[in-house]
Length: 259
Length: 235
Image 1 (cartoon, chains in turn blue, cyan):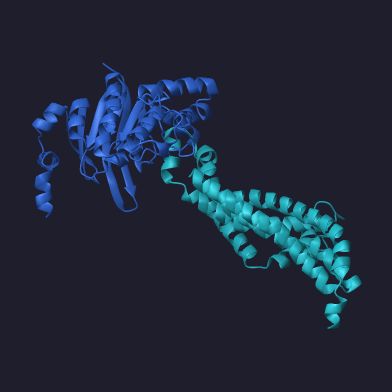
Image 2 (cartoon, rainbow over the protein chains, first blue to last red):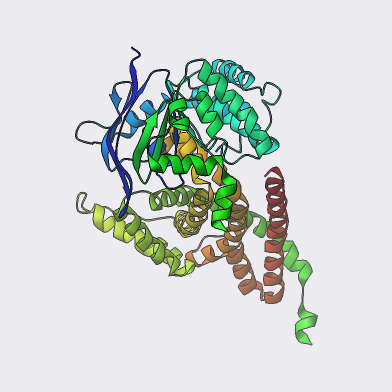
């Protein structure tokens, strides 16, 4: 039995009057790949951002490998949160590379500043991960000199170089031109094979089915259904799940409905 | 006609040039000191204004309004004559008989620094806010604290857009050092004024003075333009 990596207890999140997450309980084991899908506005990105406290939950708690982000009184200690975040890598929809640094500097920066590695050590690690994502030839390029797919791979290398225990992917391919999606998915697929614990929010249903150990379908701030990908995609139980899968697998029907 | 016949630019130039040179050094020193004060103060105010503390933000806004709502000349006079008295009054509570006074130069540099600091703070604040929120999020996700992310990720990027604007303020400050004449800093204007009143070479003195300022500020403005284009090119 693998140990628990992420534990979420009664997670609520509101923005003002608007309740986005309505009490989520989730447990994710080490090495598990969990894919979260759902219509836009379902709260899936907000949920993912709560996992590393980029969003502070309104109530409820998140535990990473047995460590809570906040103490039992809900007290917020920035240093503690920052140090726990180093265990959780995150890849953003819009890459968020540092534009004033080259690819390798992007990957080195946090290793030096946060992990307190020497420059040589950081460089070695950075090279290792840039080669791993297939960018050994582009290390000295600035983000603006790279394609979207290459930028996203640098972003993945940057997160991996911190040697996190969990990786979060927030619609990592949504901002990419269709022909660049594949190269990023390949990198994520390799990572999955190596046993990294991953939580992914994505619209790529085939990829979700292929890479996920578990699919979670969210709608309106609650988990509607979760299950093994095969079961989930081919024998969904809930009406809402069925409707959603039908829509994304037959987008042409959706378009007709809109028109 | 008399006026034209009596013009003596040769003599004025001969006498004034060395005086203006030494005045120029004082003006430049005041500018450098003033700008350093302005930069530090501007950064502190800018960061204070994006902090979470409502009280701090409120205090800073009031301070900014006071400085921006009063003329620089009045602030300089206040800094020279009034500020030392006020500080002395407070310190006398603990140390009776304490008397503080500012030299004209110190009062001048402080006055310029505080005034410009308020304007620079707006430039710095705007350039910090112009950095995409995603940059901070990426840094936080990598384990930076918000302070670390501000200083090592956001501010280096903000500086890029702020530097050219800083240049314009620097040139403005050099010109504003002429106001220091009113609190007896022996810079260019005061020297030209003294010379003019002694020799009655009024037209010559002030014309040469104006040209002296142009000789400093025009190349500097050009330089700043160049710098701006360079930074823009690097993107």
